[in-house]
Image 1: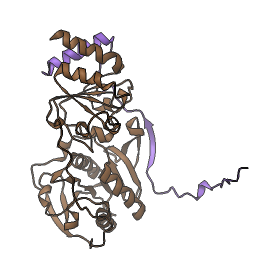
Image 2 (image 1 turned 30 degrees about the vertical axis):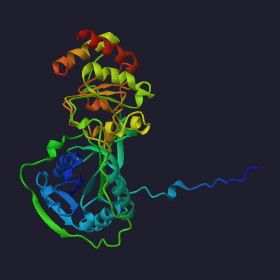
Image 3 (image 1 turned 90 degrees about the horizontal axis):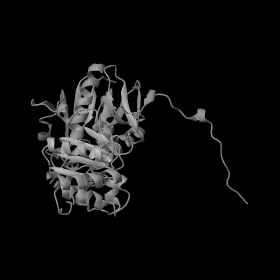
Amino acid sequence: MKTTTIDELDVEALNLSGGPTVSRMFLPETSEKATLISGTEAEIADRLIEIFKELGVL
Amino acid sequence: MNQDIFVIIEHLRGQVADISFVMLAAARGLAQWSGGKVIAVLLGHNADGLSGNLNCDQVLYLDHPLLADFTSDAYQKVLFGLIGEKQPRAVLFGHTTIGADVASILSARLDLPMISSGRTFASDGKFTCQICGGKIMAEGELPGSTVLVTMVPGGYKPEQGQSAQNPQVLSLPAPILEDLKVVLKQYIEPEVADIDISREPLLISVGRGIQTQDNISIAEELAEALGGVVSASRPVIDQGWLPTSRLVGKSGKAVKPKVYLAVGISGAPEHVEAITGSETIIAINTDINAPIFNLAKYGTTADLFDLVPVLTQKIRDAK
């Protein structure tokens, strides 16, 4: 036999005044930051190798 | 309430943490909006020399032997009195183990609103913060009272918070701290590392996306082909798949390699803070919304398990 009781709380009892207000939510703008490399795995690998060479680590 | 912006300076073992400079840069814009000053709050013992390159209008320095090393108890006591008395427009903390600890408790004790994971402030005072580990951003208005904000890295460069000019330093008496419940007894240095990843020019760093310990070998083979070293984010270290000496992050090492190749790393704030000094970050992650792409110069959403073996083989063939 279930004996647990569930209490109901009045939401209005919460005082949410004085806090920050959120006007909008959005996904991070990623395209302006990282240059995305697309293509097949082989094409992406070739581009990464070019980048490694440009950066002097290969 | 006055219109000044307080920045709680984080420092460890005589070094000001980069997040402190990030916060000073953020505070400058916010102070222009509020019409107040940027005030750096420095707690420590014989630590006033750390104020030298802080880009601020004034440093409030509180010296006490029990502030030589961070304890939440001591910081709470000092800041509770200081913020309560000065009532600045905003107080910025690092979104770090130190800042999140102290700010949340002060928010409750002082009954002040708090914004977590703040990233930037606009010229009209609007804040942007990140939620869900940076996968979603929220923009909003600051509340009218003094507000506490924990700041994540990424919105400003640490250099923006540095200055060649010494700021004015105002020493304030610290409150009585002798009844602290927690005091630091000993600072335990990390074990001697097999490799010092903070000195390596090329890091292939793996995160949760690597999935299993066996898959670490994929990164090790790439590192061997490239002449780099494998490092990792917190989830990989917590699993025991790599030694703690390879941990990149707030609780590990900050790194400044020539190239940081992030493989299957989402870019949690604690990790991002430790890689901002990298010259070039390249990210491999199937999640286009992963925060690591906000920081990386190059990125691809290819599956690492498909891409990395091909890349390794092509590098071997090219040699």
